[in-house]
Image (cartoon, rainbow, N blue to C red; front, side, top):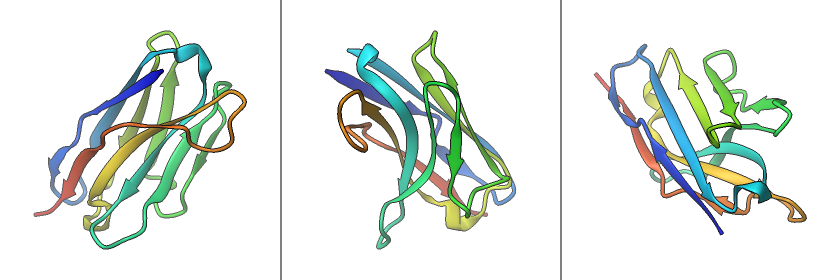
Amino acid sequence: QVQLVESGGGLVQPGGSLRLSCVASGDIFRITTMGWYRQAPGKERELVAHITRDGNTNYADSVKDRFTISRDNTKNTIYLQMNSLKPDDTAVYYCTANRQFRAGVYYWGQGTQVTVSS
């Protein structure tokens, strides 16, 4: 099995930056695409960004040019660098992973809270 553990969330002022990390452990050889989702209270969970094993990335329009997803396969870790943060970015951010021979997101982390407020 695979476990995903997020870290790096917290409270930041508008315009500030945070860097989220997600470490995968267990049967990591099964992991393919990894990414980040987020969910704000009362809102639908949405894809923030994802990255393939080859390094191809995709971003939600709301975060494009502000957030950067990256991947270090030697450390089984992905990152989400978040710059120019806005109050609307406030949400629980979840690390996700797809796996071979399975469609869509298969593994979920426990989530880390990001709060953007002055």
